[in-house]
Image (cartoon, rainbow, N blue to C red; front, side, top):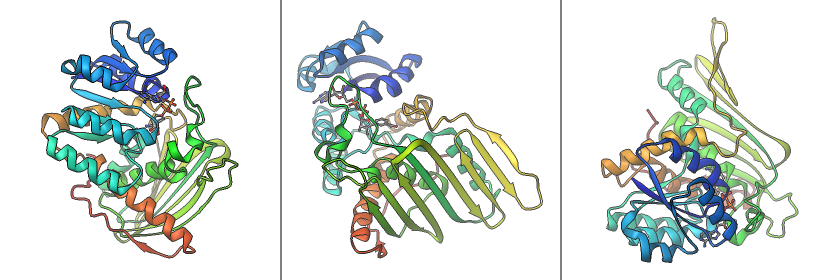
Length: 348
Ligand SMILES: NC(=O)c1ccc[n+]([C@@H]2O[C@H](COP(=O)([O-])OP(=O)(O)OC[C@H]3O[C@@H](n4cnc5c(N)ncnc54)[C@H](O)[C@@H]3O)[C@@H](O)[C@H]2O)c1
């Protein structure tokens, strides 16, 4: 498959390109970026690719040489570029969050179906090795019936983009679209979906903006999801100094806890089992998770599956974020969720 990257910044360089380089089934043929230094960075790694200042230039000159457009742009630029790619008859891989609201999402799902193209958001936490392993343990019945989970994700400020463009675009609501809910919140919901399958019925949330950014994007969120007879409690903050993520899942017969590369399985009357699963949550590029995601994207393309599960999950996440804001505004009241995903299942 021939791929062109649109937006050659941090995520393209540190997460996508290292994986494309090692795969024989992906051929990177072009990159688009308005910034000279970023086009130069692309050429340093791939001297033989075409580089363009605008996506329209690429489509005009080189469209026949591309099967997949890989969009690694700041969030608010996803919608228009995805539309352009789908209408040019390309499959689309797009960094997360896919879009900023449910109207944009519905419009894109409609266009992808009309064009019979695959639209695949990069929900890479579904492919994080320790999460996949914990999902396997739950599915195998190791902890009995799951009852409760608690996720704590502590970030250290807004992540910065490459210095050559607008490194602080995540503090600008017009470009970022949202704060921690659409960043670590999306990932935590994706982890819950991978561990438990299905989808939640309601949410109660409290969000706060403690940062000094003018846009007052939320950087603290505590929410509870009522998820098919389980309660999932998620605490997110980006106001700390050291990034850390902890996941604990309690079942009727045992418990799983995940801290970075260490998975601990505690089952009644047995010694705690420690399983080392190299995952590296603290590496923001997460390049080692990207291979599984690309395998799944190519599988969706080959089987003409126009409802890849990360696309269904993206709709669920947008519904959860919208209801989290309403719940928090109303003092944490429970809000029902409306998005009924057709095909949300465990990653096998
Ligand atoms: N999956 C993950 O774990 C992960 C990690 C980091 C970032 N992301 C996501 O990746 C996306 C990009 O984030 P980033 O950190 O790489 O940002 P970045 O600022 O490092 O890179 C953005 C790039 O886009 C370029 N650009 C700006 N306008 C453009 C346009 N109109 N056409 C083409 N290129 C344009 C900029 O010059 C820059 O090189 C975001 O959606 C972010 O949420 C995901």
